[in-house]
Length: 125
Image 1 (tube, one colour):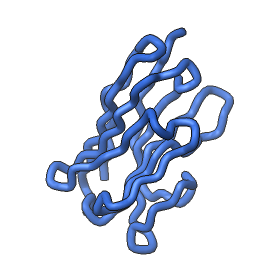
Image 2 (tube, helix red, strand yellow):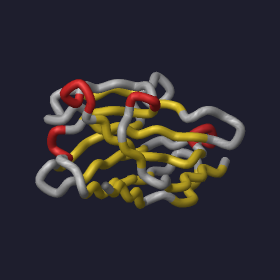
Image 3 (spheres, helix red, strand yellow):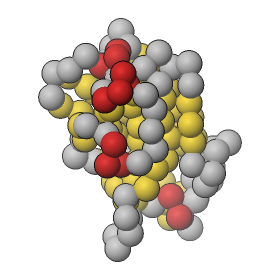
Image 4 (cartoon, one colour):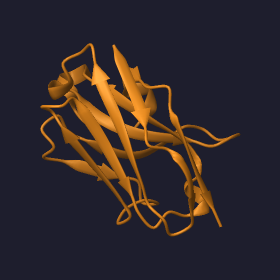
């Protein structure tokens, strides 16, 4: 199983970034997927999640209206479009996959099965 994030980097406040996660080694189209982030000294926190068929999406209040999660099951790819970035969005961003309980969407990190290595996003003020 592999989840490989890309697209992170340094951006000024109010800018945009697009994160991608390439999945392999499991049945991507049957898994719920999520994005989480972690800053130094803080716990890993939920950012966004999407159901296996993309019918349902969920967002943390802090990113609602600014971030958009999407998936392409034909390409085994998960995406996070991040707009209007703020310095407080600075963190390592992780994609995660959840297959338990029929791939139902959850927002708690411990309920996800597979994780990527993360990609750094830094937003300067």
